[in-house]
Image (cartoon, rainbow, N blue to C red; front, side, top):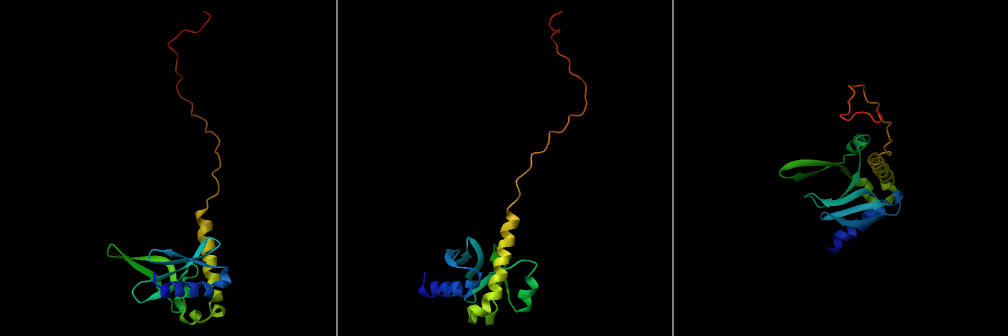
Length: 145
């Protein structure tokens, strides 16, 4: 791992501090950036150099697109595959203060994604009554006769 890649990931952790204390861990040739066990961003090179990609969802996609952010799309078996991450706005890369609203938005998306994965415990259903059917007679005669 080159120092410059690690330095960039650490810089991104500093930028995202508004979401909480962040850590960068190696992941798929890049880094996953998380706070409190929630991945809110990744650092990856899709061909144009290392970039910070922020967690998003359908509810905030328009905000990212309006800010000129690109969707995270990679090639898998020759087909483009998208993930719910968008490049960070260029101006937000300048300071933690400018990144703060984006960091909080990405954290909210990560929290929603985790909540969607946690399903409430299954309730035990009462046993369904069996429909009346033909009585099955025993081949043995009843006792005591």
